[in-house]
Length: 315
Image 1 (cartoon, helix red, strand yellow):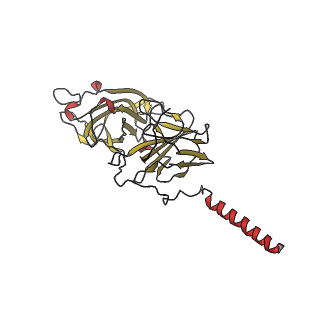
Image 2: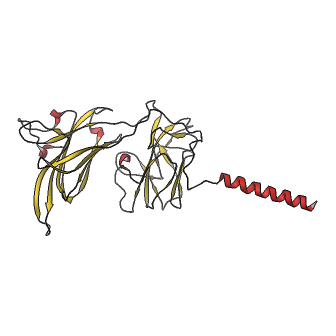
């Protein structure tokens, strides 16, 4: 009889251990999609558009990348082959006639809205507040991006200097220049239920709202969608993994990259909301993501929100 009781006890222990192991999160694999999460079939991704930067009319000196989210337009000059930026001038308009020009159709960079002087940079991004314009989704606009670029010799003296323009459309008038035509993109699911969400307890800077995750804060932090705190949702940092729990009121939108993560070292956190389309730490659909260590993470999520019992305002 004692042998039977011992056998029953051992079988009970083995059953408890087996069930417990099955319920433990597997940090080496992404969470399964077989969780009741619904995906919108109409969501679209916002991706950067790229154009050549021409110096001295026919020298390929780099790439002009243009990207927008719902608050900002990002215009990035990236140079190659030893070229360096000393000046940039950017102007944005609904049509070509909105670019400052003289009576011959030659653009006047000194009259452009956005002007900066640089100390020999290989890359620079102009961040433009879209609320200053009346642009709409799918509207094609004109961007004039001018630069002064140089090359330096062994003693850091300027050995070559050129005017440069970003774009693939030749401008009118007697002097050479280029411009870019860019279509304003909107990321949504087409049914009004989509929201942008950010994981983390800490509000970011700038006019547009966003949150970031600080690894020196709590191990588990909140998720905000549409500026509202979402109950039951969280992000946890655990031994090199970010574990995203959408909770009962959110699901990922459709698309190949509804989860976007960018890590930042201490001192490198941006002062305004960074463009998620340019994130490089991770882009995909996984909710458990292995990440290299950074002090901060910006965790951007494209989500659908439904059944929320009561919106709780952002902190």
